[in-house]
Length: 349
Image 1 (tube, rainbow, N blue to C red):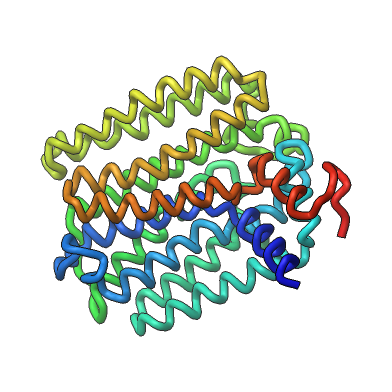
Image 2 (image 1 turned 60 degrees about the horizontal axis):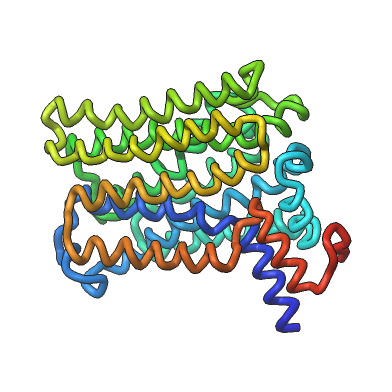
């Protein structure tokens, strides 16, 4: 019984893809810093309000629960793109995946009630609905080529707004220019990052007749070029508020990320016709959106507390990665086989 429960938990966490919650968690934390919460924020974790940890948890769930619905809505194309994720989902049970998606969505809303903040509760309810509309009808935003990017960016702008509503209970204060600029730029930046994930799924999406920002192009070569251009451009946009005098000069340090982004895009181009290599590169490249927002936090406030807080979340990420809690990764399927003592492609339930 205990072993079965452990295997079920492993399947749920793997299909939720635990690494994908960290951009949302860091977006919430960054927005909280920008929202003017001063009471001991930079001193220690024990000085944080309960609301901070509540919002951080809900934001993290916002980034992972969407993957459960995505597992079900992507079954057709994933037979080509990531067949091992389909096998993990079928082992756990497609209907059970949908049920877990509904349960965790409800838990997010239930947790928000603890804040007793009407604006925050409303934002969580709306965010939960929009999160599910990414995968499901009537809107199914993921099937709308460019609207899907804005919906995907909800993984950042959603938690960003949650922190804004939660950090000022009982009232809504006018956001600072810094906060407005970073909200807009991070929405654009993360939306454009969504084009990168579409490239690795080019073959399966094209074969299934699904239109994405990648399959709009007649060749994968042109799709990879497009991704490289928008990723570099979205990072360079952060120079604008510095030149406008809204952000301090040291925000230009963020442009050092070009030394990582550009070489990765060159590797993508060279390996564009090698699906296995492309997926491996993209898996590592997902560290970029995870680490980019912590780098903004450090630029804003380079302190031991900020570094320690970021370090704790990255340690959690490291543990999840060591446990192979990502169903898009082949090692996750291999671990499930070891847990069940079953040979490849013969898992039955």
